[in-house]
Length: 492
Image 1 (tube, helix red, strand yellow):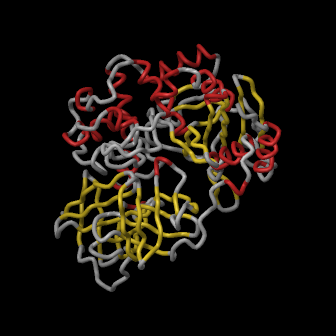
Image 2: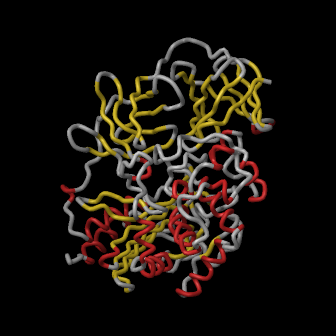
Image 3: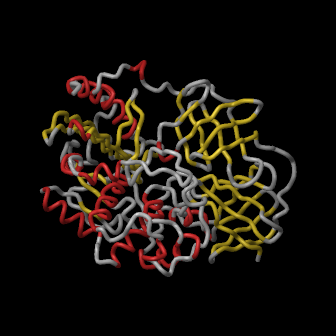
């Protein structure tokens, strides 16, 4: 058993946290070994007049919730992993009904994300939606982002559907979480809405010009991201979970339908640190960032929680974990530099587009950091967003999400879209005049310029997102984002 260097890890944590000083928001780093805290580092404040952050400060865990839900689902024994969702939710449309429980948990179901579907209908992030209205709306989606088992692409849709299926079998996620919290003596809890009272919850902070504002989410929370708790709560939960056989099951990546290996299990992803593949997960909600890494063989868990939107919790966790394991900087992945000419690219057809930036790539409006790989390839370090790319012969080639791709520079021609008029989808309306797209009504009405990608596709910005518009015919067009690729509008 190799020795872990906790003083080095603590020094690395303090070095990263030192810029989060004064009365601004910050974060907490907590390391635990065999149930005993070995590292506690904190910086920043809970909020105006609320005092400094510490190991017992309560944060939203965002998508760190997912592995807790997967654990509860397996504990319930309510479903087999190869059972189609339609057996538990018979009202689902044909396409999502065929997705299996395992595929939904492992981000292989191609299930659309309801939050991004709402965005494509013009709903802002602050607009409140209720569970009783969201589910029947989702159940009617008779399309998928991709064929089940063909790719690993992040979406919250499967977790929301499975939470409903679990409740119908008598297993209510919030009650199961409460039972675990009582057993462990922790304060972790599941909420229905952002506005539900959570004892001790510190406000999440979103940077704005000249200061900060408090983050907010109007959409009903689900098992994809409804938990809150302290860093100590999360570390205690992991300490209890890691020795159990169920941890091995949720941390084991699910292969694709082709048998190809992946790095994503059930709410657990594998992160490359040196020559190790370390299980953990990250999460993001308005004003909060969360992340953890762990070593079940040595009883180690490392937790990072922040109450600031610009806090890179997963990156901080990886940096501290590397110091803990004595991995020198030279053995870590090196950020990609000048890996391809900057700008917009698109596939020959369909809704796949990307923007090359220094050190990263944006795919369908979701940004992912890239690193130097082997033999001239550039790779991501996120199992749920696997990328292996290089620039050759004027194109980006390689793989995205385990699928082969070839992206060419976008065509900035002078052609007009030819889509003038009014368009509607599920009660939402938009209007196109030349290269201008108008969305919303009254004071919320906004105009966006349509930027061409070529071959009947354009980008426009609305509600802070860059949306792809694809012309399907004179009477039909499709809007898409990374997690929702099939919202169709029809001409009025």
